[in-house]
Length: 288
Image (cartoon, rainbow, N blue to C red; front, side, top):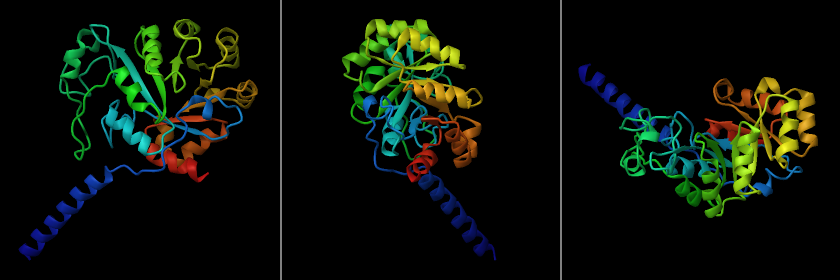
């Protein structure tokens, strides 16, 4: 009896350990062809709903550590149309990809990003939740742009005031046709366009009036980011009549609802969805 119990426990342990490892192996699909903005994002006639991989493979870092080259490569192989990156400045003025103000949560180190030099940032390791993957390194903006060229579009979430520097690097890495910047106000849009008149903008708005202000000041706008509750039929019709797409974040409750949550967003006329669960979102949209 005791031996039988030991065998059962051993089998269960091995089974669940294997299940965890294999569960962390990301599904793969045919990579997207939407690495150039004009292919779909900038084309009003394109009806495909685009998938945006939040921080690469999501804030839970289930498949790979967030905001790392490893996570972006996985997102590309999982069929994401775009990867979202968070840009911050180091003490010595270099641009790196990390979401938080500090390195405390994602790395083995401590301190504010703005108080650390690039060399100190590069010496840190990012924890990997997925034990099948080794710890990673915080990449620079330049490294990400060079790595993603020809793979996917890049959604740039700006966490630093150095907008012109961001655009300069995007330009130098020949990614002007593949990167787009999230701007929360017209002044940020001006700062980006002053560096390069052709940089694509994703403007965060709540109302039709705010959308019109962005159009008047910074046209062309490729996309407006809106909350689910703000995308009323008349607002959606207005934005689409201007040849502009609508982006929404599924992060949180919509991701938890999965396919049902994504359908609710599609029913509001969304053209682009950012998600932590592209392993669910990509096959769902492709099946449609």
